[in-house]
Image (cartoon, rainbow, N blue to C red; front, side, top):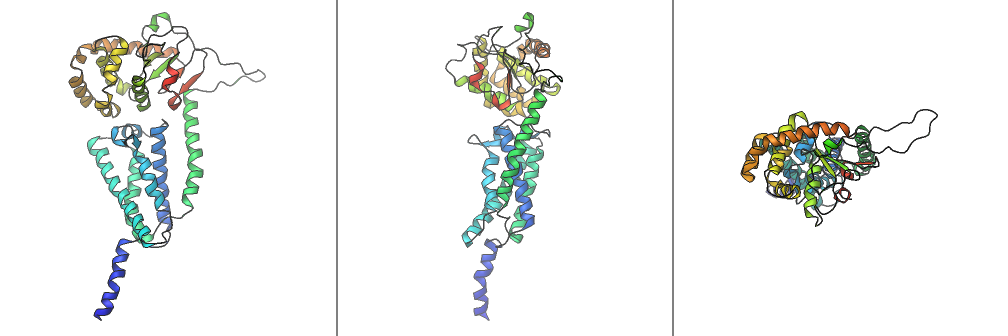
Amino acid sequence: MPNRRAAHEPKEKSNVLTLPNRTSSVTTSLVAVGLLTCIYLAALKLLNLPCPLSGCAEIINTHYGSLFRVPLPLYAIPLWLSLTVPAAREWQARAQLCCVLALALGALALMFIQFVVLRGFCPFCTIHAAAAIAAAFVVPKRGRAHAWLPAVMMALTLPLLQVVNHVERSRVEPPQVPAAGTAAEPPAAAPALPASLDKAAFRWLGDFDPQRSPILIVSFQCSHCLDLLEETLTRPHLGTLKGPKIFVYATYGTSADTTDVLAAILSQQGSPQEQFATVFARLDEFRDALITHNSKELRRRLGGLFPGYAEKIAEAKQLFNLQVVALKYVPGRGSPYLQFPDGSSKFGGDVTPGLLYN
C-alpha cells in the first residue's frame, strides 16, 4: 500500500500544476470576450476610435493605461492567445496556467486602480476583468479554448473596427449627397471666420495666415489632441512657420478644467509659443487629472506647477467664451479636427503634426 500511494503522488502533483488536455466551449467564450475587449481598448488608444460608452477613454488614456508607451491591452492579447494553443507537453500546459493567472491578477490590480485610484468606470475594462477572473476558475477545470478562435476573431474584429471608425467619421462629417439629376460638386471652401473672431484663435504653433492657414479644433479631454500638441514640442521649427488657427472646445462638464489649463498657459512669460511650450512640457504631471475630470486634483497640480495661474482665470474664461462663438462658424466637430482652406478635412488619428504647418 505505501508503494501504491507513493506511485500516485507525482500524478496528483502534476494535476495541480497543469491544465486538462482538452478544449472547452466555456473557455472559448471567455477568451473571445477577453480578446475582443483587448483589441477594442488597444484601438481606442492607438487609433483614437470613439467609445460608445462613457468612461472608456478617461481610464485607458491615463498613464496607467500604458507601460513603456505600449497600451496595456497589447500585453494581454498574447496571454489570451496562449490559451488557444494545444499543449503537447506538460510545461506548455503549465505555461498556459501561468498566463491565465497573470490575466486574473492583472485584472484585479487594474480594477483597484480604476475604482480606488482613478475613481472612474470603464465598461470594457470591467468586462475584460470579469472574463479574466472567470477564466482563472474555468480553465484549470475545463481546459483551453478552441484553436480556431484566433482566426475567427481576426476575421470579425478588423471589419468591426472599420465600421466603428466609419460611423464616427460620418457623424463628424455628414456626407454631402447631390440632388437627383445633378452632378456632384467639388467640396466648397471652408467658410471664412469673421475678422473679429480670428483674434480668438490661439497662435501656440506659430502665427497663422488668415486666408491660407487651416483650422485646428482640439479638446484638452482628448488624449490624441494632447499627444498631438505635446509632440509639436519636439519639432525644431515650432513657431517658425505658419501654423493653424487653433480653437479649443469643451463639453459643459469639462469647461472649468479647460479654462484652468488656458489660465496656466496665459500665466507664463513670453510669446504664445513659449507660454504653450512651458505648460505642455510638464503635461505628464497633470495629464491624468485632466483626462479623468478630477478638477480638484487638477487645480492642486496646476497651482503647484504654475503658481500664478489663478490670477488668469478671468482672462481665460473670456478667451474660452470667444472659442464657443468661433466654433459656430466651423462645420466640423471632433477631437482633433483639422479643416483646410479648400474645404477638405482630417479627423482623429489622421491629424498628424506634419499637417499643422503650411
